Every structure is written in structure tokens, then in C-alpha cells.
Length: 259
Image (cartoon, rainbow, N blue to C red; front, side, top):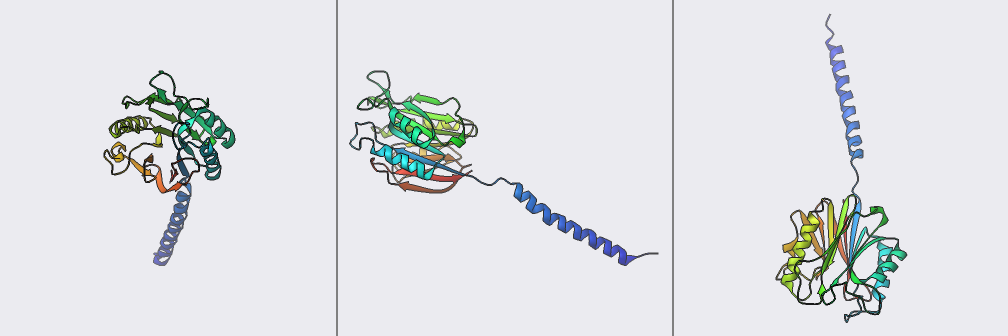
């Protein structure tokens, strides 16, 4: 005997069950997708060598420490800073550090800060959550202007992220552009998700244009002047903020992303 009504009921029950299972499966799959995490880069030029007109006898370092404590960025890139400043900043913020001095052409050694405050150079501070650093890449640029200060780059690889910083030639824009391209090549070759922060002494729309040293698959944000943050596009841009920093003639540039 055929029971079409029973067959129709069974078919309807199976269809309803499949619909319920599909509805359950979708939120489970969505729940398993990792949430995007904030990743912030703070670029600072502290003008603390002691030789420039903007020097404020360490006031900029005080401001930088307070800013780091308040905003807790993942990476801080620092220019025009002394070795003693780094010692103090790491002690008061708990951040990890890497530092490399600028070269002194006249002596062949490191450039030194005024008043015996140690070597003068560039640095990267990182939040402890990034973990221990790998072997840093630090070197003088192949292209240099005629000044005594030999410009350098510093890149630090971590397990999943690499960070670089620099302070490029202020005397010759063509040399700064060559240095910027060398830095970008080093950063892009690190084999990890990478960011760059620095005072590039180049501007958007200038001649040469800073955009000429942005690698493919990267983007750039600036403070409206010579400070820039470059990031691989895996770091999804959220917003950029310029922050007054007492004691230096450069604002802080905070670039907020997610990854």
C-alpha cells in the first residue's frame, strides 16, 4: 500500500532538519574566525642630540614617556635620540628596545650626543607582547650626503612582525630618496609582516616624492610633513593622528591599524 502522505511528511522533516543544521553551522564557522587585533605604530623625532635649535634638554623624552604610557602602542620608532634616553625610556615604560648609532664620518665611529649622554642615533621600542627580537639589521646607507652625519637604518624581526626605522638625509632630497628605496628593499625582504616609521625628510607630492619609495602592497601615512609610517596592507588602516610633543619641533605620528 502506498502512503504518499507519510512520504511527504518524512521529506518535510528531513528538509526542516537540514535547515536547522545549516543555521547552526553558519554561526559556528563565524565564531571560529579570528578577530582582528589592534596594532599601533607611534613615530617620534625627539630632537635630543643637543646640537639642533629644537633641543630642549630632555623635555621631549619626558613627553615621549608620558605618551607611550598613555597610548600603549605596539611599536615606537624613534629618531634623534641618545643612548641614555633609551635606558630611561625602557626603564619607565617596560618596553623592549633596539638602538643603533648614526655614523660619524670624521672619526669613523659613532656620532655622540652633547654633554656626554652617549651615542646618538635611532631606536625601536616594542611592547613586551611582541616577544623577543631576532637578529637586528643595522647598517649605514650606501648613499650619503656631504655632511658628517652618516645616516643609518634599523630593522628588527619578531616572530610575526618586523619593524624598521630611520632618519634620512636632510641636506639632499635625491640622497634621501635613494636611502628610502634602500630601506624599503630591506623591509620588504624580511619575510614577515612589516612596518616602517621614520623621519624621511621627504614629503608627499615633493620632488622627489616620498611615494616613490613605497613598495608594492604597502601604504603610507604621514604627519603632513616629513614623518611617515609605511605598512604592508595586511595591516588594515584605521586612522592616523598627529599628537603635540612638548620639547621637540615634530609632532608624534600615531597610526592605528588592525591585523
